[in-house]
Length: 178
Image 1 (cartoon, helix red, strand yellow):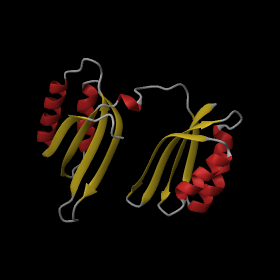
Image 2 (cartoon, one colour):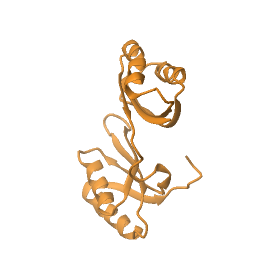
Image 3 (spheres, helix red, strand yellow):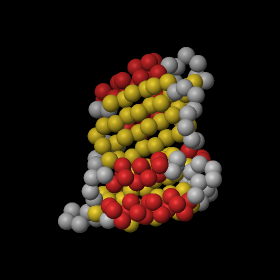
Image 4 (cartoon, helix red, strand yellow):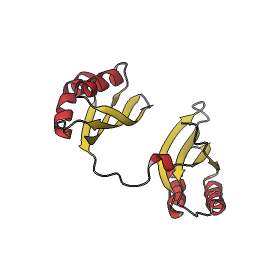
């Protein structure tokens, strides 16, 4: 059993998930970790699948090619090596940022987190609100290194938020909620 990463992106339309996962089922691949979303009308999916012996990144990408052509998707399949980094289940903290949209918010907040050794395990952004008063929302899930001074991270995030003129909250995440 090997693990493969499958990514697909294209204009959103009904049937993408069904078509892609049909190919995976046909090749006896099991979905493990997944993330799918719609960004400004474009559907993006990232999947980690367990593939049986004989199913390679090349053969699976070739099997997905007709679906990609039919649905106008860009599909890439890559073999995954040994796990690296922090597992997603290590996440335990969430940073919520919201305020007026401007360039640099994600970079500044992520840089503060990285400066404390915090690993970003999930990140999403949205622009919400009316066109004449858009609000930028950033959510980051973090895995913090053992012994990290959370109060110091919180203070540095609040300082960055003040520079960016946005609101920022760091809080623990309930591990029982997905």
